[in-house]
Length: 189
Ligand code: HEC
Ligand code: HEC
Ligand code: HEC
Ligand code: HEC
Image (cartoon, rainbow, N blue to C red; front, side, top):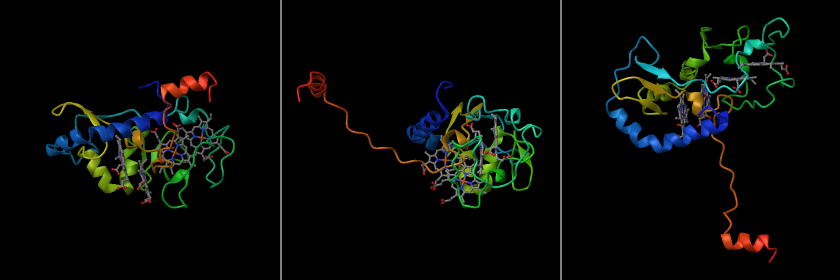
């Protein structure tokens, strides 16, 4: 769904999960043997990171020359003002996940740099049981053939890494009855 904005895509996958829980449960009965060597069982592809158009490569701006890396925890004003960090402890900062000197990468606590395509490894450090469920196809969503190539949706296809708690839906007024719309249009009130 390349035309949908990131947020609707996340929501769509979230809803998709609810609809597919039945099939996920079926899949869970016969999970492929996970390979301990890799992060996901072999023969499995991961969905594309749902990055906003134009934001990647980050190093277009974060070239470390005209824009120097700034490790100081602060309120960002010049860029990324749309990002609200609400994920775990208040002490959390951008550079716990994003690499200071290579902005096109994420990093693990060990310091190992990883690509955005394997961001589930980052999540898996702290959400171990969800990560295991995801690998086994119990949590999240995957599409493809039960005995062939499968595509896993990344954690970030459904969860906002910056503010992962699902926002409650905004209550909307109930739809208008056609008769009332007619009356309203005609000014008869
Ligand atoms: C818990 C780890 C984590 C923290 C903390 C974090 N990020 Fe991220 N951020 C990610 C991941 C993972 C992605 C990749 C999402 C994707 O693949 O679409 C991302 C994506 C982004 C993007 C691309 C957004 C887009 O619209 O596509 C920007 C910009 C960004 N982060 C900046 C920040 C800034 C600035 C902070 C601090 C205020 C921050 N991040 C804190 C994990 C984190
Ligand atoms: C259009 C230019 C632009 C792009 C593209 C961009 N950034 Fe930034 N970014 C900035 C600017 C400017 C700041 C400094 C904002 C401030 O100090 O108020 C910043 C600050 C940050 C910071 C805070 C730490 C620091 O070094 O200042 C993080 C983390 C960050 N960006 C992550 C990302 C990530 C991750 C991406 C790619 C997914 C990205 N940015 C893409 C312009 C950009
Ligand atoms: C450094 C540890 C750490 C990392 C890395 C991390 N998280 Fe979290 N996450 C937390 C903590 C702590 C909480 C808050 C737990 C709570 O509120 O119960 C949390 C909360 C969440 C929640 C909300 C849980 C709820 O009950 O609503 C989701 C979803 C989530 N994280 C997903 C992710 C995803 C996706 C990633 C990878 C992009 C990630 N996390 C990376 C530590 C982490
Ligand atoms: C297809 C969408 C989808 C994917 C992919 C996905 N999740 Fe979730 N996740 C959900 C939904 C929907 C919920 C809320 C329902 C629930 O609590 O089970 C949720 C709940 C969670 C929670 C909070 C659960 C709790 O016990 O309160 C965490 C933490 C979490 N996910 C982490 C992850 C991590 C880590 C990954 C990747 C390894 C991931 N998710 C992949 C859709 C997804």
